[in-house]
Image (cartoon, rainbow, N blue to C red; front, side, top):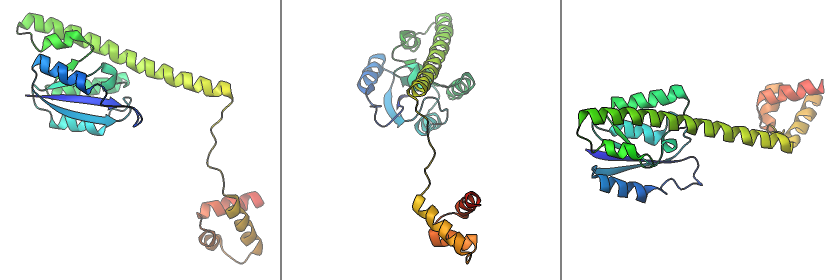
Length: 201
């Protein structure tokens, strides 16, 4: 049996491996098995992540899935989180969360009744923490949106290339070339030529 250590950060500017030493130490203290490390920079709001998918494909029955916290594993919608849990259970992985001590004990319990009770408690706590992670992410996005609105910022689309537009107008005015020929001459899409022609008309 192996330990699958999963480390995630949302952007490349963040240090995804920040918690690796802590997780390796926990793995050693629990005597879980040889650690295999999966590191990726990807949003926790996405179910399909390259390294997470790779982990789930390579995992074997009884392996431990070790993460720093639930929000490193998921900021998913409830529907997608249920799907992720299904995949984890289908592979027979034991989920151990560094900052959730009840998940540590489950790997060392031999009594069936105690194991069942701890399993139920862990499932409830993990569901709660996953919901909190999702809500925290939604609030953060809403705060950013509100801040941009208060500042008067409005996202703008791609600005037109004025030089190309001027040349298109000149060629249209000459009335000697088709719109396809103008597009090739100027180096733009024919749709751009039609847009400029519509404004000219």
